[in-house]
Length: 451
Image (cartoon, rainbow, N blue to C red; front, side, top):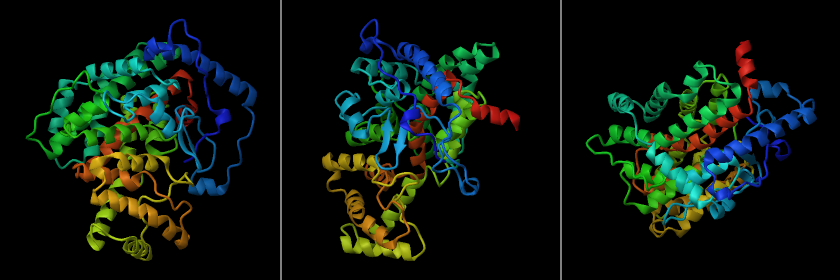
């Protein structure tokens, strides 16, 4: 699946002049001012360009998918084949410089990325901290949900548990309740926003409870700390609160994985299900089941398994030449080298670059055998893959290192890795649901209704 990523057709707003300092505006106040501007831009776009063609659809597209076709308007991010991901025009290095980190930390936190995705604006530290407090205050799980999660058998896949638990939260959907009462269509987005923020707030406790029940049922879950950021609380509840490296890594991981345009399975599924006016809980539950598929959310597990197998074969301090031989052994055996190439990107994945830079500055990672092997492999694999000649992009993607970092920090339960991805992807998928409602983007809904 590809999507409409042309910047000329993306709804980009300028920062308005506020009656009081922008840094004191709440998230809701900020959106109340931005939404009418975006609505006006969409009306102008339709009026000026509504009849223009964006290209041809070929039979190959019907058979092989819509990659390369401009077929979707996506608000939060643009994925350029050469530059990689941009969030409202900002590159990852831009975001690392501009977005507020945690108190005492250096990495982007989920709240500042969420604000950027929703509004297109860089939040002040005050705005970021305020959002952190709100999410922490609303992060406790209701009793019925705790009992439901506790009733799941330990053998039930963590992603199945996550999808079921998120869907169960729909009984408290403000959007569903408002729709049943006949709320105006122009107000849909406000209730969608409230549901989305409530779901994001509860995901850390929900995901941590699944981890505890599945792997460490004898442990007690700590309480949410109202002074912590979203990921800080999540890491505390996972049992890694004293591991500052793990906490900083997951802050960066979750921020970078928050959005990657809308053509991937999880983001598009939330968009599709939401187009039927399903509430955010049901829409994102469906998204999670798409994320659970091996071709989407399991990639970093496959990389880690391959890396560990190579490490076992060549030793912890394998040479570049040994790695090269192992790569050829993999390729000649009819297998792919996991963690290399990308469906859209043609240059190195800037998310991989960001994670490698993280590895370079963290003292505890400099002597990590698995992390050193990742770096050596990234220096050898592109040349081997170019010589092999069957990979359009021989460069490493983010999965080449993301799972290996979790493994280094002690989180070795592979099946759980996709749950962390699921906590992250909510930032972008739910942002788009809010804007779908604000802009009445119901084209998919009309298709569904005709079926």
